[in-house]
Image (cartoon, rainbow, N blue to C red; front, side, top):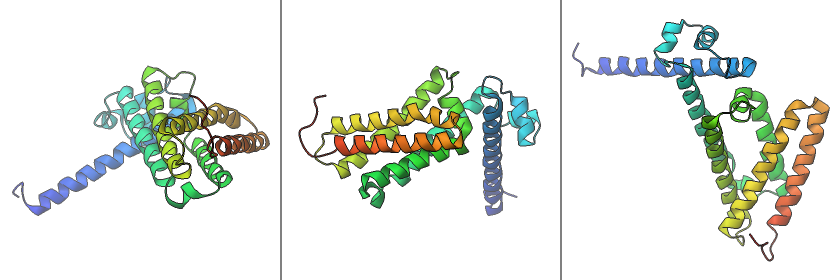
Length: 215
């Protein structure tokens, strides 16, 4: 059958779709392995076994664990950026401060619980230079998005001030999240409530009309 025949193109698309599906399955397996034993101890054989394939099949998509890491970083940075782009919009950015903080903190805590490999990679004690750089890129992007929300909520604030407030909010969340993760359910609930109260007070004060603090 000629290469340009429609049926040939359909088969090519299907093969590409299957390949993308297998890559996602490998990354899913890698997330599970990393959450269990950490990136340093992860091997391609362990990922292949968890993905239900031979190491040779895995190598068709990722030649080594560093390429798997690159795939995970792309997944996390692009996925989290899209996540916040979709959520920090519309009516959400105009809701009362306490409700906005409730939603943002709950989203972050839920994601931390559902994707432990993300935090193991980007916030773990063994984070390397490449991981640290990826983490900072991701969080700078989120801070910029929060600053855009503040531009709607507090248009009287200057651009630099909005970014500073957003950066402080995000840094506070990042600092408290490990405490929440390490605590019992009761302790985690207490810490989450305190985090929300802290952020609500800070955001309310820092975005109130009036003279801006010196920066």
